[in-house]
Image (tube, rainbow, N blue to C red; front, side, top):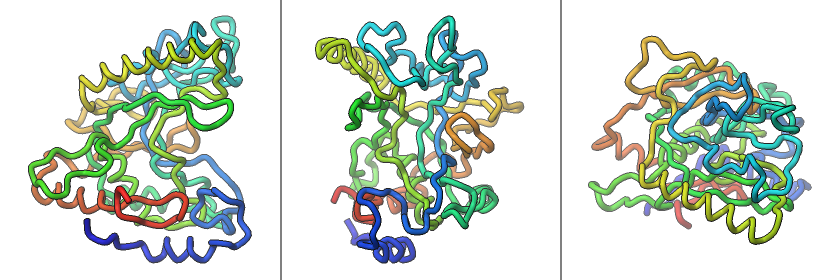
Length: 315
């Protein structure tokens, strides 16, 4: 691989703040200038209405029924936090369940914005919208594939559906090699991180959708059986291959009319349940020739969350 070229502004901000008295493991580009945390982000919506979920849930994708990896009857799980299941239609609330009633908030963050207040370390909403609508950010047709269900390192853990790029390092040598599964997420992420430089910018770990918080199991055996069930579902989904997420849905869950051939782009969230903008693809298939060269050029690097700098992919 070629030596990575850095985004000098991002790298210089991160370098200046090393040892500046901040707490370890803070993900923000510039913790000293991040005055308030926030929840706005750009990402994917996996929301899908379900008879088992909240009646006000919107459908934004029908590619994957996330209820298949849930344990709504608590056969394996003993308890969770008060949110209950965040995906698969969300929580209907009493008397069906006695968790907080809430719409499906299934999502994958690609870039956390935080707030739309620059004085708090964020960036103006209009600046985000203008950059994307003007075509400065190339948005491919997003065809995604869940790659695993895992428990994160928290204690008690959160359960997450992962959307890892597979293989983690693309084949840069063979021009006929297929692009990795979920390449679109890294491609979009890297463009956003190179274009937008502001203190509260970060991405919360590997690409994932949190499905449950503070998971507590009935026993180690029940935990093992739950993940066996999830592995079987992931295997089935993998056999079906990556799928377009949005096949014709608007922010409010209504059908797009007319429906474009390519609909599966990204969304702008104020928080996990409130979406304000849908950004359709502007960088359309097929992804060969010059388009593939552009994609691979962006995939040569990845953002190091610990060092807060760019590095060659796979290093």
